[in-house]
Image 1 (cartoon, rainbow, N blue to C red):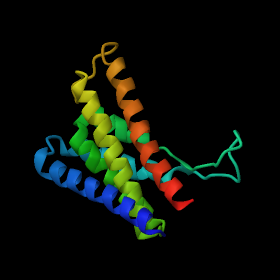
Image 2: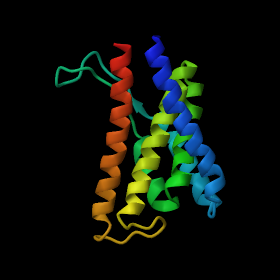
Image 3: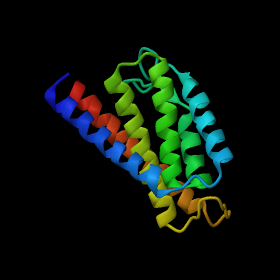
Image 4: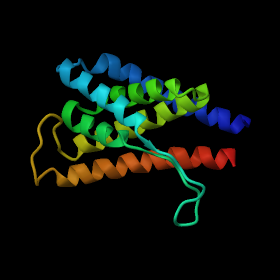
Length: 166
């Protein structure tokens, strides 16, 4: 692994650790049963993974797909961005570690999902949605913005690490 790659991983992980530290002290878990259920769901859905085949249908490089992203976004809408970031990090840390992944990979994956979830949650709140209260159809725009931010941040981080390792 190159110095640039290690440096990028270190920066991403440091940002996520800082965000998680703020999350741990910033937002008291007001509904621990919901937080616990979301954490269990994040772990369970992180275990459900569609493994990548030899090549993608479009001829590009294939990637595996995890179902936990839906839980991360649901957590934002239910318990808010800070607690959702904790849920996202916990699910990835537990499952990737149990799968025996290398430590840099575990940390980077957890950090990527943490930062994507937190950014998505911040945008969800910034555009006027209130975690714990869903108002449809009024919140459709906030949900769409949240999903786009989540995918955008995650893709940016993953494509950067892929380009550094290629």
